[in-house]
Length: 118
Image (cartoon, rainbow, N blue to C red; front, side, top):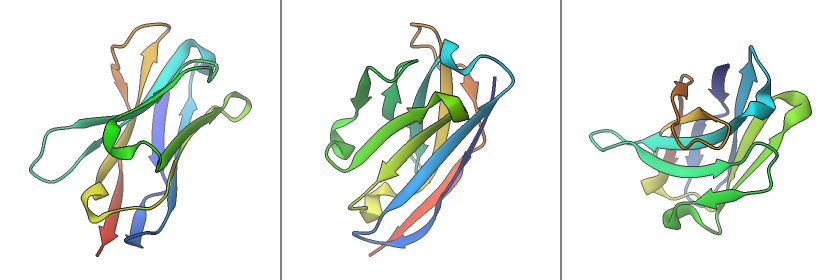
């Protein structure tokens, strides 16, 4: 599977963005999809994940209640709706795939930059 993240941009604090992760190349429903981010000078951070058919979702504490992950398997796409954005959400956001029930996200797409101004 190949992944491509898009939808990033510059937004003011309190604003919203929706990121998309478009997949191609194989059976999309074989993969759980996760979102990760990496801010400048910091370690990569797990944000959220969604199971193959969307029945299970998880979020890191810092985004709970603000971010929502979803997937449209007919479009081979996973979304990350980000509301109430904060300057500390500024980072490059990547989506990644894990096969089946694995938590080994070993397929990565190019990231998309999210910048939140104060």
